Image 1 (cartoon, helix red, strand yellow):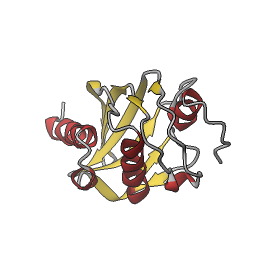
Image 2: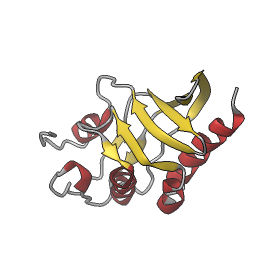
Image 3: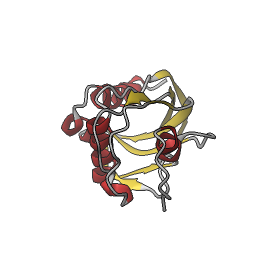
Image 4: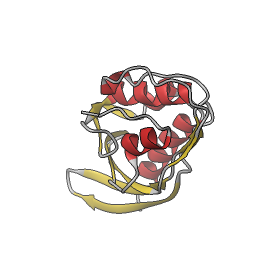
Length: 155
């Protein structure tokens, strides 16, 4: 097991949980891609902005990050780590999801509890190059908006 890759993934998730978005960005490569939870891939800046905007609307957002394990190490590709994530939170403020080109989401006061999903991280050197989120029914941004009673098509 590559403990350095696990440390980097854990540090990223701890920074997101603590809403330390500048710090979180330091664990992502410049060519970072986030896929699976959103209708289209997000780059590093879009992922950090989306995470920040979600925290603005749901100050108590939590990722419930657990069960981190190495999946495989392939020569030249990097190290894959997989964790289980369950996002929860209560939306007490309106917020925008600019990276997804959505209008302002009005404050609802509702809580969300998305189904658990596996997040797979690819770590190369000292940075995470991709996070691929398992698509599960009722999960992702669509599932979150659904639980908030927001009926906006996401393209």
